[in-house]
Image 1 (cartoon, rainbow, N blue to C red):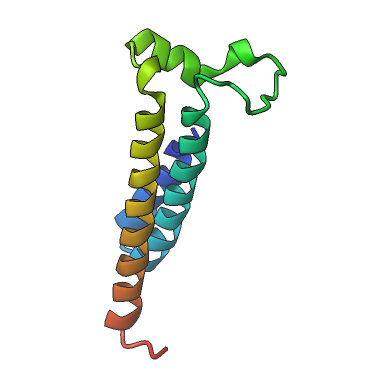
Image 2: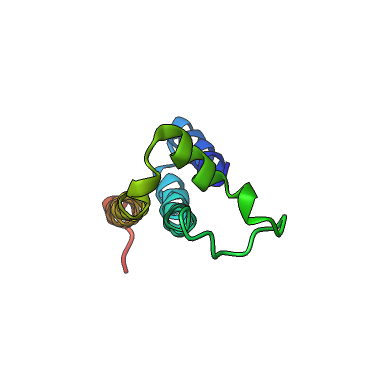
Length: 106
């Protein structure tokens, strides 16, 4: 949900042809990817405090265990982090393009 909700707003702004607004919300998507990467990378050690207070409730631990990828936790975290950084860069350049292409002066 942390990534899905802002992505819905990106889609909404694209549908409305409000591309600059879509680029701003896309930046939010990238930030959320970075936040998720920290949580996913914690799947083995489970040191981050959870709202429930029970480290057995760590959903990334359960998800990666079910997929058989628990031994690849660091890689999964790095891939999600890289995706977030790429999304942020794309949002920045897309927003800059939208800003400059509409004749706005910095």
